[in-house]
Length: 473
Image (cartoon, rainbow, N blue to C red; front, side, top):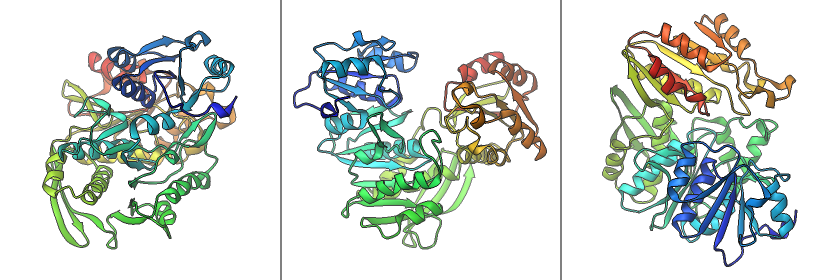
């Protein structure tokens, strides 16, 4: 691979994106199309909603990777991070001597150039925090741009091209591309950064916790002295990483030494009420229809960012009140027979635990039925085998599916859903193992009762279990 071609030429008209149907790559393709570039793409798994989203934007997407998708009039090829060096389109672009780049490189050059980036980083809460902040800035008439890993219900999109001077980017610690194994978030120069949490994840690229901390250490070290880092005070890894930094730091959470604190929390469905202290003085009273302590901390970080941008408290409060959430984050998909089906992206043990606990505390009328599909590169590995049993303590009934792509993982490293169910039973939980999605649907259609909340957790489509279950109910 000729790495001298890993750059963006001065004049670009036609851009091709390899693996265009990923959330970030799809958003980038649409942004480039909106900026009047000629955009094409390819992917091997083309299905809604991204396929229809791209089609509506007029992005021509080829089904499957093929060297013929790379044409001589292509000025630049954007290579997704799931693409390997032996991809036929990578081989073709190298043979033709075309310029190529990663998604963060393209985002920096075409969208973020000249703007003030606000980077939301951390193991958990990036999408929700980014989304809330984007809505606050929009309601403050700052006309922000953003690129986020989830669909914001307020915009019905995961990206926006604004005319304002700020851009909000979900800062991902995952690697950039096969030719750049560094984390994506190292490509950005934040004006303000948020660090929500640092835990072990992405077992396919990180060896251990120290490896993860090295990545975040590089990110924090890169934040300029004039910039501000908003850091969560309830994570010992975050505390360790922010010590002795050159940038300005504001901590948020519940620690009495933190700049920003949350207190006086009360729940009166559909609202959660709370007030916020800044340096021990009342900053404001707020309410939200988001559920759970983890979301209150996500909100608190956005309040800190907004205040640093001189956005008035009443504007922040108004935005929080009419923030409509993010698809696949505690999203109610429907109710039948008095049974409510909720969809959530939770997959890491901490996220699973926090999500179930939040739903349990908010919906107090019936049972919480937790349905979990382990399908990430980490959750299909046994690295979290002994941690997951603790994550389901707040559930009344638990359904665990066999990982659908387990053959991708070396046998000795594989996670066992059967063992998880056995461990849950040993903890006194009513838990069941299933080999396929249809069996879960049949079981729930028979066992679910009026008042039950069925919380379905997966980072994938879960074979459309939500709609299929609602139809069966």
